[in-house]
Amino acid sequence: MTLLIILACVFAAVALMVVLGERFGKPMSAEQQTKFSKTTWILVLIILVAAIVKEII
Image (spheres, rainbow, N blue to C red):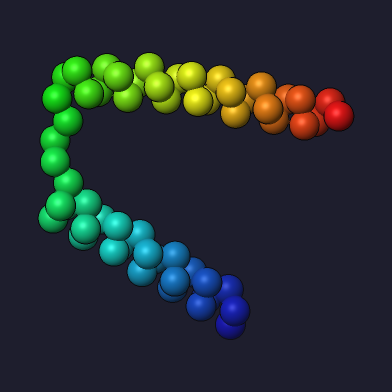
């Protein structure tokens, strides 16, 4: 029963994010997309290195 409650809460949260994203979201310009893409790659690299270090230690 607990699992069903957790799944219902996750579904409600995702549905709320989709509704709010569609209502208040703005399209990004090409410059913003490029900047966000570069930042995302840097963050992914940092997270990957941190995970590797955590497993080694």
